[in-house]
Length: 558
View (cartoon, rainbow, N blue to C red):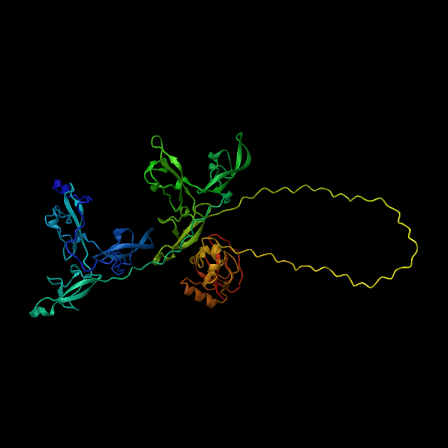
């Protein structure tokens, strides 16, 4: 029995001599876009087309699951959204003769044994068997009619009374094709089944993240020194005792003093531009050097880091391999998400959505539909500070010198004359002065990566809300904690209008409940959870710009 089983193991062998063979010609191919989201079964769960892996994603007979996105969290695990797609090929319809093994009905002894049930089209796809001398085939779905889905309760499943016993399996509809016979059978119709198709439901595209910008050379954060377990005062001796939070690296700035007879050095932490720990190359030459790979195709980085080749690597005579590194994405870096969930960039803003030290949370969208709609997708932005430059000494002051004094001279004596009569003169006219010049206004900030899709995005308002392309946007958000709106938009100044916008944007509305809370802003405003509030006092209190609890005003066209 064991020998029989191993002899029947399927092994597909591509061969130029064995081409695809069709046993019958169909009028129509099965469509690639036949979907039906009503036939999800979720393996006995609540049939909401959400599951975790293909083991819990099931569809009615004749359909197969296709993942379309994320749903949310179930028991701490991220579930995936799926729909059901009509199968084009179905091995369960193989009906070959001279089978090698009942467990492999699509592997037969010769081409003459290749058969499918219910009018499915046979298609040879290669060789099988331990020696590769058998024929492997599959069955192509007939379209538009499929007799295998008839269900009348009679011995001939495709005969029944239309509107009564004639029915089809789930996901199919009855199509009458004729009569099943004469006499009493004349009222019994022959029918077949047609897949109930619809175009796939395309999920709303997530707000695209901006393309990576150049990581700034001046991004420093002195609060991230760790000093290798000493007192975290940004003083150490050599790079072994100078350490920073993940994503940052030490940079020496001066001297601290003497520690154990050694001079310690002052340092700060600088955002890394290149990070070898993000190398993710396949066919790694050396596990200790994941940035050395065999070919250009294997040069890869994790988390959207940009792969940059830097030279060759390896040991002679294999020293012609590819050495590369990974360039930090900026301003957003998913590798620093730390929500504690399996999908680390999904969490509740201001609660489980967190970033590693030196980074702050930036909401970027939603992690799914249904119960996962409140779980936000986020990324992390480095907390940058420009290092304080040393003060420039003032130039030396030169004492003023008095101008040289001419020696006194006696005035010449003129003969006495009658005083001349001076003609009348007009009063002196002051020279005209030019009106004061108003300095040119500073152009509002608008990043080069901003597009129309960023105009109404809460997380991109500081970078994109002032852009000219956003002037026609129906609404935008103010800068973080700002009490003015980007031109030409204006605040929503009445409570009914604010409630109307909450309904229009499908956002929770808290009314005036938070009008006396900290971080409030004037009129219609929201925190990062995008719950709209109204503050009739038109004041603000302790709003922290760009932090996880930042607030922004809703701004609309006048």
